[in-house]
Length: 130
Image 1: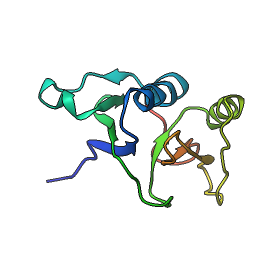
Image 2 (image 1 turned 120 degrees about the vertical axis):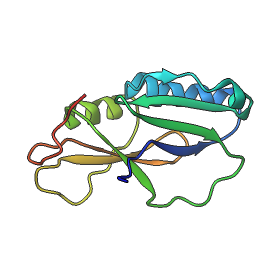
Image 3 (image 1 turned 90 degrees about the vertical axis):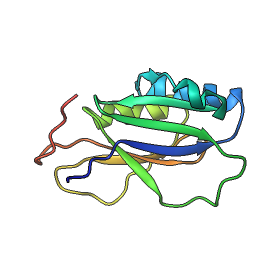
């Protein structure tokens, strides 16, 4: 049976203020549509987003987080430079890593210090397909 990535979970501090920050960063800035959390777990202080047609991003509440690490997930985007500029305009500090031919990309920390990679596939079998 082939495995498919169904969702990614990243932590944030508990509370409505950080939930709103998640909505602003992942929803408004990046453009991921928010998804309803199942009623059975609604009390867990979660914010869910759709990524494409079958993937999800779960932003969950966690009281304390380990030190910053290189753990990350990557979102494939249509135009990495336009998005990088939007991050800069909002006061974020995107970081350009080592080059991968055919994959311009950058990293940026979300408001909760989770590392997110954004990549545009320009010369690869994984062409952007919204």
